[in-house]
Image (cartoon, rainbow, N blue to C red; front, side, top):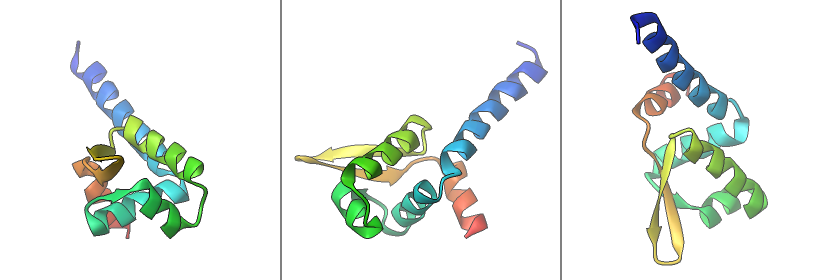
Length: 94
């Protein structure tokens, strides 16, 4: 693969991250996760005052984009931000 193809592939990954972050609810979730290190769905849901199913859909998009990861703790999953580029982005824009 030549350099241009590698660069396009890398930029495509970054564009996918930006698309995932381009929703106000997902931006809010990531911002809040950075402030508390990790959080479960119920806490996020009560903070946002949205149905759990809606919050779960947003979390799934963030997870699919490689922005967050979930760690099982008994019956609940605690989510945290794992993407360093996103951490820098949030700090820069907020």
